Image (cartoon, rainbow, N blue to C red; front, side, top):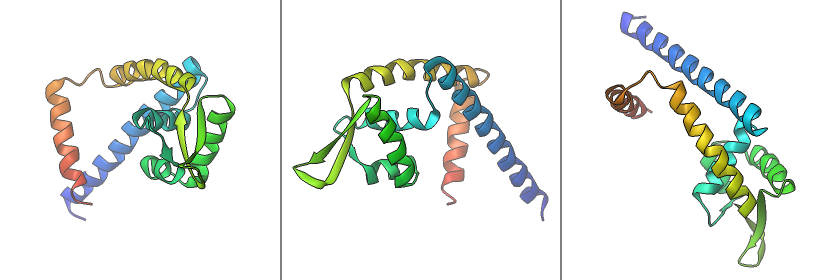
Length: 144
């Protein structure tokens, strides 16, 4: 293994550590301040971005999760009045899910705090740091 290879491995481990720490902090924030989970927030965010609604398959692809995981979260959101399922163009086999007005309101309240929490997590990074990080991550992503 070359020195560069070892440095890449260490960088990967560091990226994982930073990601896990940030996710843990966000999970704690959402649980503590909004009595919700990160997966629930992620589903609501995806539905907020696509106000016209999405199929369950589209939602799963957007979130990179299984249909079963997405369905379980949507079931809970629907039970709580935050989302609703509707047949698409009268075809009961094709269901679209979207946020209800209560779901939109709840998500927007959570999103404001979520953004503030992410801002606090990365407060030590300035504009130049963020631009450099974006560029480095974009280059690293092209190797896929």
